[in-house]
Image (cartoon, rainbow, N blue to C red; front, side):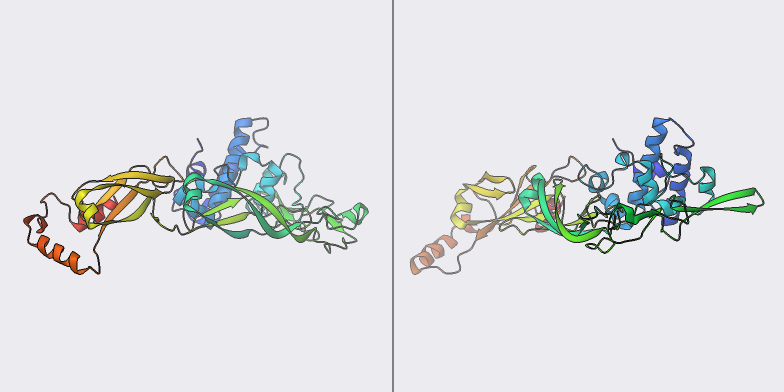
Length: 384
């Protein structure tokens, strides 16, 4: 089971952005591979901390995580996957956390297992799309293939942005490292700091002749079919994130994320209330008197229920477990069936005579049962 992100970084849920960043630096330094060579558990904790920071440092992802937990941002259906990233990926994505400070002096500016800190282009931007789901899809979860219009890697230069291989040269300023090291004298002695190379912007290479198709960007506008696995129980307004499926980066930079906003398609007969589903059942006066068996719609097909004789208008029946599942637990809602006794708005002469004769009968005089719940009790029960 995944550990809580706040617990991983040793912070509270009210922590500020600066406190999150500071705590991440502390944990990352403790478990950095250079300090723990060959220590696999330390490496996993280093990646675990990166995963926690990636979510908590993003206000939108943090809000979703606070509301839905791991299921909203990292349930095998998109989101960040810290355990699947190598050290270069982590340092490339979070270079602002480790660069330009004393952290670089501890490890000689090393970022990742290969010692090469190049950012490999500019990261692509995130994309947002809306997906409308039916009640049935929300109840069971659904896998969808969505065609997304976005920037994709250039097929001519394969994302490099250069006309050909000979048009890519090692940066003369940083020698291909993507970094410029500076040594300064402090009261603690000489300290080495590492900054991004201003010539190549950390890429380590420069382009002498640009690709004629993408004009040196390494990407063009196109479309991609993205497979999205949506968990059961999502709600209107919830956001899911698919890592690396946003706009392609420039010159081989990592792609942004695809942010999916969930919308609910209105059901012709049912209404959603949190995890519960509500249905208005209309029956005739005679059916209310004699009772009947009736078929009602649910989000999982049809269900038969028995309406007892003498059922009053406003009675609520509950079908246990026929509502929506929770996206973040094993909880499941119910279906609430609200009975409405239909009163005829027009009657014939013969019907009027019959009803007038019945109106004097003692059985037709209102005699509410003392045990009968009030309207407010029914409302409270409906939402309990």
